[in-house]
Image (tube, rainbow, N blue to C red; front, side, top):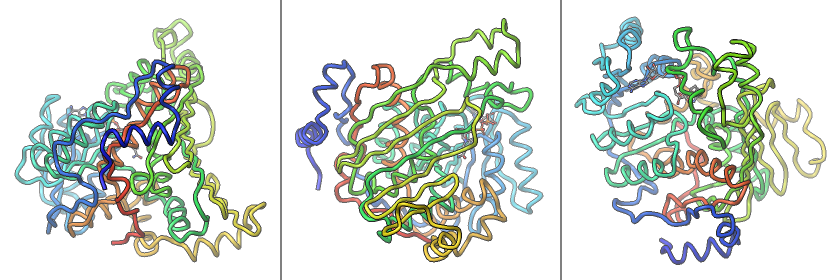
Length: 456
Ligand SMILES: NC(=O)c1ccc[n+]([C@@H]2O[C@H](COP(=O)([O-])OP(=O)(O)OC[C@H]3O[C@@H](n4cnc5c(N)ncnc54)[C@H](O)[C@@H]3O)[C@@H](O)[C@H]2O)c1
């Protein structure tokens, strides 16, 4: 059932009561959406591919790990590799030759050479591992060339880019997926199983985060092995909000059936001031250095609170500049119990006032292990990539393409999870005022099936 625009606005105003606050705050409301120009992709299945021929663009830290991992999946061939630098592309070609794989076409030497990867007749899927600002233009062009497109996280950095992904995917009837590997983590898939089996009852609240001390990586120059053009530091100079929301958020959205029975309605976001980067820059370059004196707009800690149409809440945090242990929080709480991560803990009724002991937790893990991990866990650990979740993501993606199945993460999920980048910044810049979240499904969330318990 499609809700028309008037109905959507009415429902949003009624359910959220945010319209008045938005008008007062001067925040632009984002309830409106552009007219659909293609066919809805809810439940979309593309033609099955006997062999998945992949063109990888961007073979820095992330892409160089993806190439051998993808090449090791049965029925997959890396047919093209693109990068700014010849030596990076050539290094991956050599890695493939060492694996006994056919030689890919290499596209390098200019910032536009990647287009040849998208135009190649030998590519079905363009796999994009470049810096953030390249993700959307590359995915859009890939789809316009008739290829499926997947990008590293986030897939888009603005609302306009989110709509570009949705519109282009619908117009070209191609898949477009964010490579949210954390949806395939062992603990995340265990949590998903507890949700699917109704162990936690009605789900009420989720918490997600990317808390990762990246001060050294941020300040590392490209020549010393740092990010190409220090892309992450450049973003921190110009933007506030949460630029990297999806690692924690993606799995929590899957638990809560977001875009598949529920949807984001509004959010509010606040950031602390910035301290960590300036201190780290002063320690590395000296107090009077350009780096220490530079303005970094990105606050150390950003906290965003999302409210859903069905009355659930999600907290999302981002902090890459404070000394603290890594965490994605990964918490889901319901009417019968709670799962929290870092470290993994579960508490269930009737003993929900204390966490399970180790023995009970191990028994629960054995009972509710996700079939993807149960069947492919050993292969995943061997292939590696964040403990195996990168391999399981790629394996499942290629399985869906080979069998003409809907992908686990749709273009609507891709756009929605990425939209937090701009929406959180807007709210921060308006003193934490509520911002309406666009419905990228254009009403399709009401009939879309929840993600099932998938396997390969
Ligand atoms: N999912 C995860 O766990 C995870 C982990 C790390 C990084 N990432 C994401 O992966 C992406 C890449 O991160 P990284 O650490 O590999 O960065 P990086 O700087 O090491 O690599 C980026 C690569 O893209 C290439 N590139 C840049 N512009 C290009 C262009 N116009 N044409 C062709 N190639 C171009 C660069 O030369 C470089 O080799 C980022 O979006 C990052 O957020 C995700």
